[in-house]
Image (cartoon, rainbow, N blue to C red; front, side):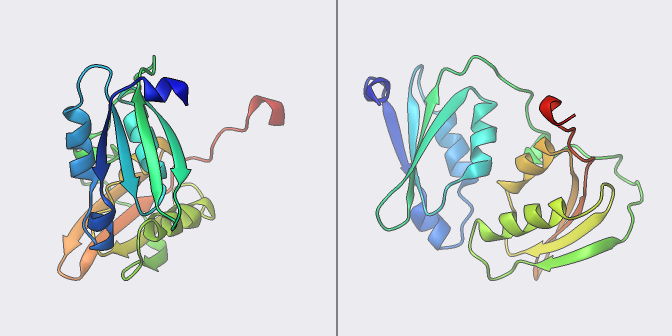
Length: 185
C-alpha cells in the first residue's frame, strides 16, 4: 500500500446517489476525466462496482477494493496500466447487430424492479450463463443499467433497450459460449 500513499487521490462518494436510486456512472466518468496526470480516484460505494473495473481498466486504471465496516466499499482506481483496450460502443452499450435485424422471441423474462444494485445486474448475468448461445432474455429494470452494458459487451452478448413509463426494457441475445482455457482442452 506504500505506492498508493505516494499518489494523489481524489475522493468521490456515490453512496447517497445509490441509496436514492440515482445512477452514478456519469459522475464517476466525469471525475475520472477531471483527474490530472498521475492522479487516482478513491470511490466510495454501497456495493463493489465489479463492472466499473473493466470500464476504467480500458482507460488505463488498475483498482484496489476493500469492504468497509458497515458493508460499504472503498475502491482505489490507480493510473498507470500499460494496456488500453478498445473503447465502448456509443453510450457505453455493446455494439450489436444491424438495427433492424430480427431476433428470436425471449425464452426467459426477469422483472428486476424494486431490487437494489447490483442485484438486477447479477440476476441478468447469472440467467444468461444458464442460456444457450443465440437465445434471448428480456428483463425490465427501474433505471438504465449503465454498469451492465460494458459487462455484456465484454462477454460477447448483444443488447437492445427501450425506456417505457414503467421501466427500462432490455432484450439481451446471449453471445457464443466462451472458449475453453488451454489447460481444459
